[in-house]
Image (cartoon, rainbow, N blue to C red; front, side, top):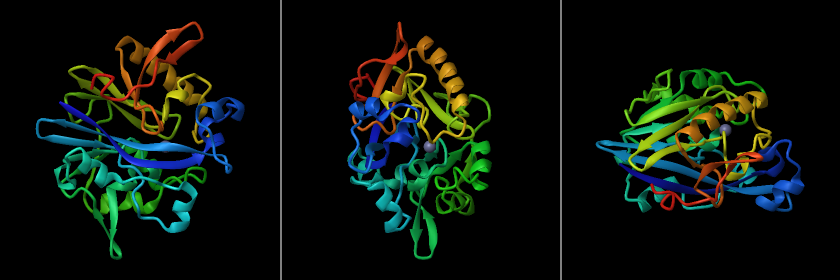
Length: 279
Ligand SMILES: [Zn+2]
């Protein structure tokens, strides 16, 4: 099994929204904001190659929106296709794309514009989505509407690429289990990869960065913050027991960390790169 970290680039999000009830005085030391209160975050995907499968987990922001939209997020970097190329993969090599959920910064790179229509960025890939998340995103609530963009979502189905993940903890692959979360959005899927060197979990928006491990550090974006606490509790139970390594999609510096049981509660150990973590 070969696992690669794919850094599409960075973007900016409001620090207050990213850290919820945590005061600026605390989070600004960890991820300093600019004069607009925006912090820099990574857009980081994961590529797992095993046998004939080349599975991409999440696909970043993509480029389908207008200048005004991107001016809010200030994306920087080489982009997903170039980042995959840097690791030796072409778009046509990808056999499967798993989307943890359908917020724009997780699924935008799956579909692109072609004239007035849309086409698949990965022409040979099946797209995998949780069924409840799909139904939730297609008829979005007013609070989450700005994150669920029609042009990112509906073409997946219209182009015949949509596949629903199994509804239990199993995935379509024997080397991956699914951990579901219900606080950030409805039924977000965290893939837990059973690699020869240990278990690696793609944390999506449960733990966007290494700094979101403590219980109260929950994003302001979350739909059901009390459910996020329950998601974290269930996660910690399994992650500590099975010694999961955490992989962060949005942490600007740290790709990975492992959990430590401290007197203050569960905390992250030192941030690491994927290779340092043994993957
Ligand atoms: Zn999200």
